Image 1 (tube, rainbow, N blue to C red):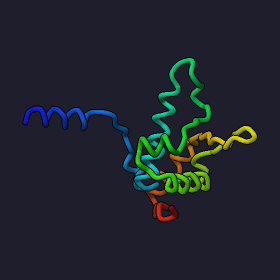
Image 2: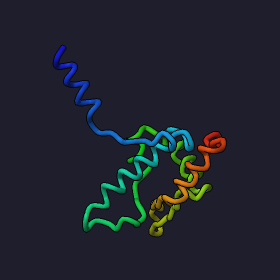
Image 3: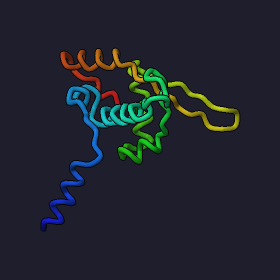
Length: 128
């Protein structure tokens, strides 16, 4: 029994993200999770001498799926929603003959404004 409690403790205390409740209410839980994954990856890549803090972030939808369980189709809808509301900027870069890669930039001021506005009005989550 003690071994089970230790396993559960390790599981619950392990790899985790913080998702702001206001973000989840305003954007929906999956969208808030998607942003948390992107921000976590950005923080990881912003270690000294790797990349500037204001750089675009490249992470594949497959990687996000493996981290979060959010399907590729749902991620496409999330990205379109966030782009439409200018919460993220997406640059698509590629070389001829190779599929383009998405590079993401989170517009923090717009994200915070969007969340603040939705606290005082009906959230736009139903648009997803």
